[in-house]
Length: 333
Image (cartoon, rainbow, N blue to C red):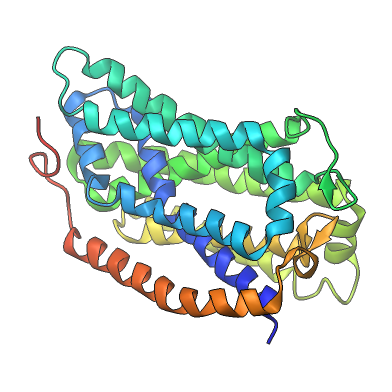
């Protein structure tokens, strides 16, 4: 069995599950500046109150899995991305504290709202920067990081950070469409339409940049006949993007969130295909980064037990708290 490939697939699932679930959670905080009504903000937070901390389970699983299964990749990535990783963790912590305190504060609630916005923005932007840094490449010499302290910072990584924020805002807006009604839902429809177009344009711009900048990516996408199957992805993105805009224009409630996830999934697959089989593009393959097979097979037994349990309790939580969120549900002062 190819344990390295199996674990790469499992970690990819965990990362996508995190983006799909915690993405709309972070997006709620990013959308706060467009919703100034206090009752609307309370209701927005109430839509994620039962699930927000459980959503971050997937981040722990993805990061822990990378350390346990691909220790070489972890030892290269962490020194290369120390600052954005620390910023992300501080943003998540700051945001979690603000989430709890804003419901209890009477005189300083506006400061906790700003803290919630800031923590969400820092966490989301940092994740985009890390994605951009991985895609643009990391300097490796003798199986160790050989770059500088600020190599992660570039125009492309800043663009990637902004793009991830836009994507999370889109997920947040479509989540609010599904979970709310009235004026709050109407405003979410309007924002989601604009964010959809921006998200699709951002994915297209990032794809063009990677193909035009990196020869190995260009060879994969532009060399016939190996590129034949890959060009299904841009067509799929156009179809899914069209479905998203159509669902928003027709004021459907549940479909936009699913279509938005489809946009993320196609982008996720496209970027993964562009760098495969490298885990550190274009320096270290996933087989070179993987631990011994006996360790990977032992860990796989635990994953086979743990991952279905996580899926089960996550699904159960969302099922219990399904439906619209009313103004008096969730946390209370």
